[in-house]
Length: 380
Image (cartoon, rainbow, N blue to C red; front, side, top):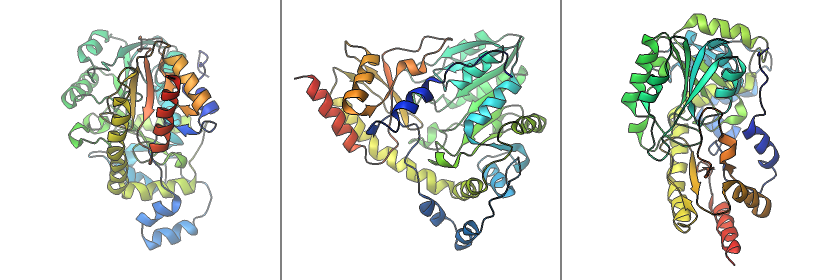
C-alpha cells in the first residue's frame, strides 16, 4: 500500500457527476472517436475476419506481439521488448510513480498537471516540488527546474503537450531537460499522451524514451488517437529491468488487457498517420469557430488555441469568478467546462481565473450556440 492516503481525484469526481448528465460536454480531453466499423475499415479484409473470430481469452501481460510491434514502430529507437502495456494511462502512471520515487526521495513535477502525477508521488512519501508552467507565454522555465534539483532527486515528471493548458515545451529545452536528468541519474517520466496532433508539426517534441536510455515515455490510445474506450496505455523505455519490475506490479491490478482492445489498438497504430490526420483536421476546423466565439465576448474571456493536444485553459474575466461561472453554466445551461479548482495544486499556485475547454469534438456549433445564448441571457 501507499504509505499515505490518496485524495479524491477532483477531475474524475466532477466529471463523474456532470460528464453524462450535462447536455453539452465542452471540456472533453479526448477528440472525436471512431466506431469499431470505422476503425476496422482502416485495416484489411483479413483484419475484419480475424476480429470477428478473435478468441476472448487472456492476453500476455506485456501485450500481444502485434500490439507491442505496432507501439514500438511509433518510436525511433524503441523495440517491442521496450514496451509494457497497461489498462489505460492511469494504471501505467499509478505503478510507474510508485516504482520511481519513494519516501526520503525528491521529485519535481510540472504544474498544472493531471492530478495523479503529483498525488501519487506525494502519497508515496516523497518530497515533491512543482514548477509552474508559464501559461501566458506558453512555456517552461528550465532554469527553475535545474534550481530545484537535489542530490536525492529521483524523478522528474512532465506532461507535454500539457493538460489542461495545451502548452508545448520548446524542442531544444526538452532535449536539454532529458540530458540533464540522464546525467544526474534522475528518471524523466514524460507524459506524451497528446503528442502527434499538433497543428504545427514543427512543435511536435521527440519522445523521451528515444532520447535517453533512462527516460520513460507514457502514452495511451485515448488522446492523440481518440480511442479512450479501448483502455490501452503503455510505458516505453530502453530500461528493460525497470519494465520487468513494473510488469510484476501489474500482476496485482489488471494482469492483462482485453483481447479485443489490444487487437483494435494495433490496427489503429498501424494506421496512425491516418488516425491522427483525421483528428488534426477536426481541431483545425474547430479552432476558428472557438476563436470567433470568444472574440464576441472580449469583456469576459481571453483565449488561445492549444499549441498541442485538444484542450486549452481559457481565462474568465467576469466579476463573479470562474468557480461560480462554471457552476452556473452547467446548472443553468447544461454546458460543462472545468474550473481552475479542478487543477489546483499543493505545489504551486495555478491561476484561479481559468477553465478548461476542449476543441477536439466534431460539430461544436450547438454547444457554442447554447453558450452564446446563455451569456446573452445573463446580460438582460
